[in-house]
Image (cartoon, rainbow, N blue to C red):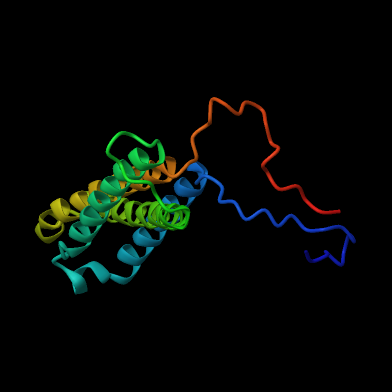
Length: 176
């Protein structure tokens, strides 16, 4: 274990993942919405990229479906439901990392889509109005990805074992 030179005590080297906080996702979404609004309104970027592509919504939708399937499958395997195969711990760690990354990507995509959608709704041109369905669909699929990613993250948690209440004897202790 390495020693922190500033304090002379061991650093916290706990390798566990922390659950994704709602505040992180909200801040990311708000920042992406602000960036979208600034890019679109100041550079007239929209008129150079119009019509908006549907590929963003499609990719986010496929990812949301895949992660929802993984969440359902992983949950059944961790809870050892009848007929479910056991799950490898490394696979669960990878799924948890995927879920954390996907929820952040979903928040950024949702924020960007929301900023774009608001701008499109306020823009009085016919071209802007024709792109509203694409932006709205992208926003909905981004929110679906966030929900699926948070579900997958929750599915990766180790369930409480009823036979071990308040017993931390198997948990490694930090060396001093």
